Length: 156
Image 1: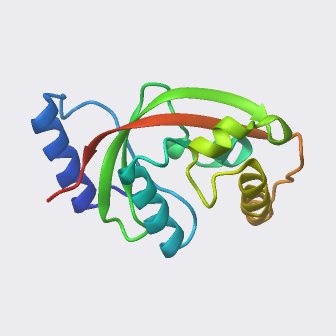
Image 2: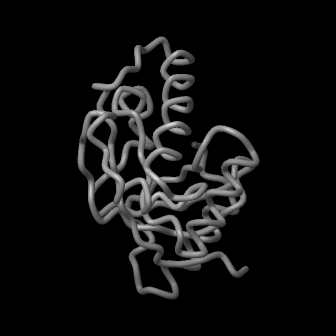
């Protein structure tokens, strides 16, 4: 995702507040694939309910600039580039879709936080994403299971 001026402004504010070097590498990205989803998931992150996210490993290979990096810093935006917060990736595990567990589903913070909700929503999401990218998706497709912590929230 392109680094909007709003994302850069949040990055500069985070660096100033935390003493982080402005030259440190960081990513800029949003959750989901619709305006509503990106905004809703961003709010869940800021509220502390969402501390994990999953991505399709094969899709990440097509978007290396958004592929999670252990210890990496990211400016999370909405779909329009409005900066929401800065997060840091604290854990990455690669699991087949059918081995993602209920604890991870709960930590994603979405819907009723149950495994069945996670499975249903993510099956649809990953299937659509894979189709759009010309990939196949099935129960054994690898999911990048990422945990993160919020370091800075946009209060500008």
